[in-house]
Length: 287
Image 1 (cartoon, one colour):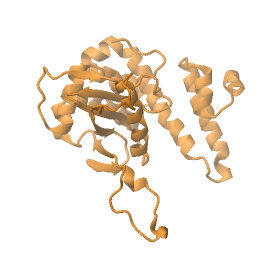
Image 2 (cartoon, one colour):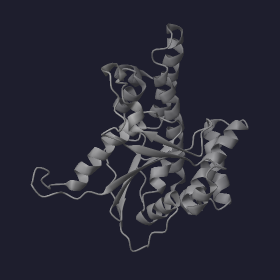
Image 3 (cartoon, rainbow, N blue to C red):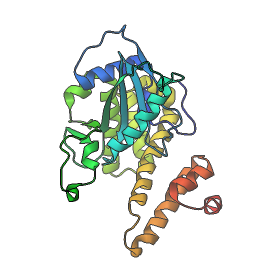
C-alpha cells in the first residue's frame, strides 16, 4: 500500500483500503457475520479528492453496494443529498457499457449508507439522516404528499472512544483508529500544539501496539495526512463564516492565509490551495 503524497487520502481511507478489512468493518456496523469467501469489490470513485470532498469509500459485498463516508468531524445536514449524487456516479461506474435504454432490465446492487462521526461536539450514538427531510414544504399547494417518491437514508454512527463500543470493538482496526484520534485530541487538550500532539500520539500508539505495523511503515505519511485533516477542519470553519457581519471579514482572511501557509509548506499544488482557501493564485504565490 503506497501513500498518496498529494494527500488525496485521509488516514481512515488509507487504513480501510483492503477488502478483508472492509468486510470486517461492514460486519461490525451491521452486527452480522459474512463468510470470507463472499467477494468484496472496492469501487471508490478515484477523482473525489480529499480536500474537495471528505474522502468516500464505496465497495460491493455480496450484491449490496455500501457507500461509507468516513471521518466526519462535523455533521453535514446535506449528507443525504451528497450521497444521492455520489451513488449516481458509482452506479454509472459499475454499470459500465451496459445500455440503460435497452428492453432488458439491468440488475444493480442494493445501496446502503453510513457516516462514521468522530467530531468533538456532542452527538448521539446513532442517528438517521433522510433526504426527505430536506424537501421544500408544499403545504401552500393545498395538499400534502405523505410518502416521498424519492428517499435516501444515511445511518450516522458515533465512533469516538466510549461510543458504540460493541461496533468499535468488533473491528480491531476501527478501535485502534479511534484510539489514535482520541490520543491526538487528549494531547492537544493538555497543552501540546497540533504538530506535537500528532507526533506524540503516533509514538504512543506505536509503543502500545495500536496500529503499530501501519505506523512503523507509514509514520511520515500519517503525520502529513493528519495535519492536513486537522487544518482542513479549520478551513471549513472559515468557509462556514461566509455571510457573517463585516467585522469578521478580517479574521476570516487571516485564517485563510494561515491555512494557505500550512498547505504550501506541505507541498500542495498552488492552484488547489487557492481554490480551497478562496485566496487568489497570486496571493498564494507571494506567501
